Image 1 (cartoon, rainbow, N blue to C red):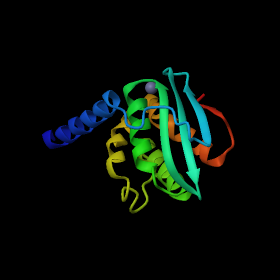
Image 2: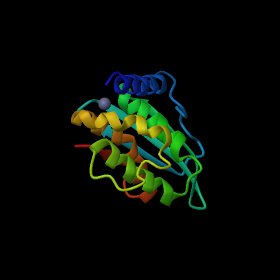
Image 3: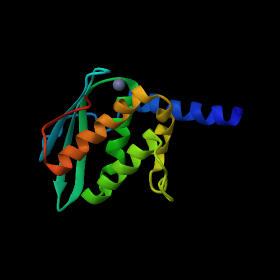
Image 4: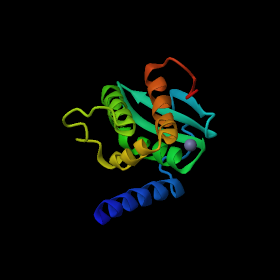
Length: 153
Ligand code: ZN
């Protein structure tokens, strides 16, 4: 039981660390895709920038403000999808969404998710799921080149 709590604390530390020192937290002049994401329920508001070349996420960054969960999720998303193909990024989005909504897990879901696993605890707080997935919805919209803004509501 205490071991489980330790693991949770560790996860929380990592989320707080990414919130304090977000990675790739800047505008991206070379971006060829840009999507703004809002979560009115919490007040999270981020812009995700993508530089796609030959179907690969060559660079990714974000700007904006929001709660610790959303900011850390955006930060860790950028480090996770940089260098991946669009298909791999979409696949990661799907698995991340399953992780935080605790839908039926498919075998091997956790494989290759790396540090994103820290967000598994979010599934216990349904109101926070939108915070964690907001950056990912923005990413997906950018990959699909469909919308320039997304909202969780
Ligand atoms: Zn939030």
